[in-house]
Image 1 (cartoon, rainbow, N blue to C red):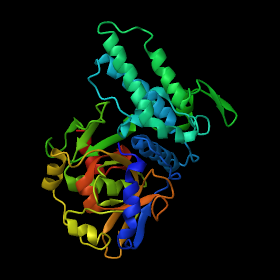
Image 2 (cartoon, rainbow, N blue to C red):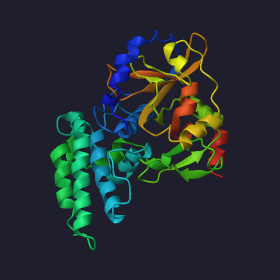
Image 3 (cartoon, rainbow, N blue to C red):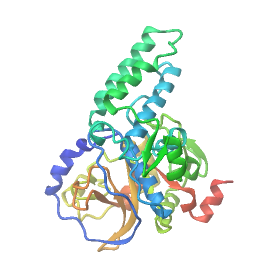
Image 4 (cartoon, rainbow, N blue to C red):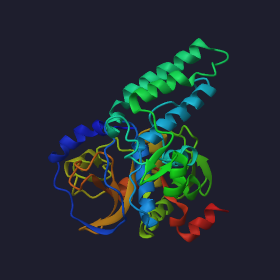
Length: 368
């Protein structure tokens, strides 16, 4: 996963382009305030937490601010378990995918941000890389030192490292005058679960209308995705927005078309496109180009965000309204970005959406 600081050059270069188009909002669904992931690789957690917080707003529940650090803490333990069991042959990084936060909610519970913000609030995640290096070294040393049986207490030293960076989450806490554990808080206040959602994607190396584990490095949990024709995928996202839902979006942003400084993402298929970035006409995306870029590793899953709405520019071109996690001062739209349909079509890895948000015909296909 890319970090916010990785895009500093893009932010600085934004002024070299023409002014962004003028947008008219078609629909923008409720969302909680923009957060800042800092120099961490935890965009997957920020995007999916934002999805859950919006879902609670959709259900007319009070606005929630859930602790990202709690999810990161527990999934570092979950990843370590898998890494040790597989003798170091599985993925162990700070990255993840959309479903992982909901998996944490189901497995470990949830905690309000005010109760467990981590050391120095979410800024603790700015040392994510440093912490990851120490955790990885600890696990690799353990596997090297014990080629046979691993000591039963191996987690003691590992958790000590986690606690030194993130602080230990409370086993019990009081919130709004009531005592909770993370699991009882989730059961009472975070009324969503992983089974409510479905991952969607569109690639031709698997049959359409079938489910497969996405072959990207950060899919350490073997999360499954339902494969759709590209137009159906785009249509499903649009319909979800029109139905009042938001979407967690996994996407490649390692290209000149993603410009958070302008608050704009467009598919730049030629060098000349960059020179007239705000005004050039994008090519029509195709399934063949999309697949080729994925197969050749040009398109990778390096950032996740939340899609909250739909807009159009003065020419009538449609854009998704996307909530990023670089902070509210990133770009001209308070941390949001307008993403063109061609950019979405070419660069999307996958989305996660509530099953209830899908068109009826698509819902019937997914349960066949």
